[in-house]
Length: 406
Image (cartoon, rainbow, N blue to C red; front, side, top):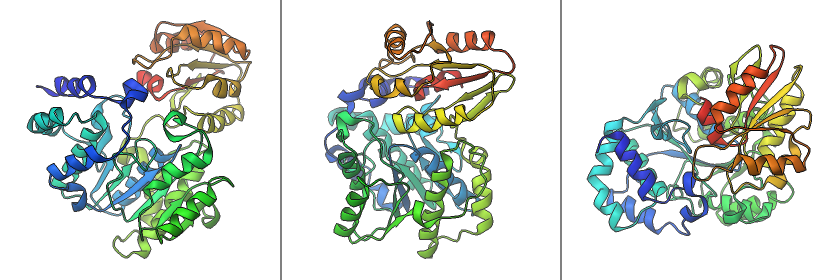
């Protein structure tokens, strides 16, 4: 199979949360452990940092990778989901894994995958660990897919674990209280391994403290400990929290004396995240006159911050290109959106895409008015044609909406 056929096979044959939602969620780590043992346990051959959290884990992972690259290390980066190409999930020093490596890995192990009914995510985690071990990286930043305790990445013993924050998302899997979600994410805390908490609430802090105590792990609350703020090319207001989380993590890594990271590497790492890692979709400006911003925020906590930043921006008229996946709690997120914007309702082109007509009807209940379009690109083009130079266009609601206009 060529690369496109290989990726299509991965997407179509196996459960994949990105496309299918709930049916792709696995209840334990048995398959992942089976796969990594079969591959010769590549995850035990690499040093890594493990990153979980409701929001900010992607930005935090890329910030960390950028700093470590600036410090001169060969850095693996595993994140999800991808925006345009599957290979974005697995990088070394900002360069995507090669098409050939992906094809060869699937071809070589396909019979094992089929026999053991491995999920898309389990295969991809195995691919990442195998690639990083073969390429002899110095360190890998491993982002959790969803949750933590039962996530396929949770077979590693990292140098440090990170939990960026806790919000209500994926409640059908992780529970519908902040405490239950915190418990799932705290599942990445390992015995004697330090953990950095980015943000906490009165509901989540006791969960983290209890798990850290149980594991005899040092715990650091970055929001209490870090005062300094370095400039970054990631300019969303929410990045201030992610930067504190990264700075605290680097302080922990420095104290372990395994990696030398200078203040200059930190400053340059923060300033060159996009160049070093290829991160996209975080308060990303696509045009000016009119200003066009896209952002992958897709749950209540993430959207609140982004919409507040829009509110604090100067413009004449606000245009919002909006689409969601079909398992989104619209009653929770739609009230956050301003009534004085013009809406361009659309559906991301995936199986889980919410029908734009349903979105229009639900939005009307919250006083949000606009038209329905057949695709994300059609909605975006209409917004561009309608907007004046002094207007502001925001594209969001789902990672998959953003992916279609990049």
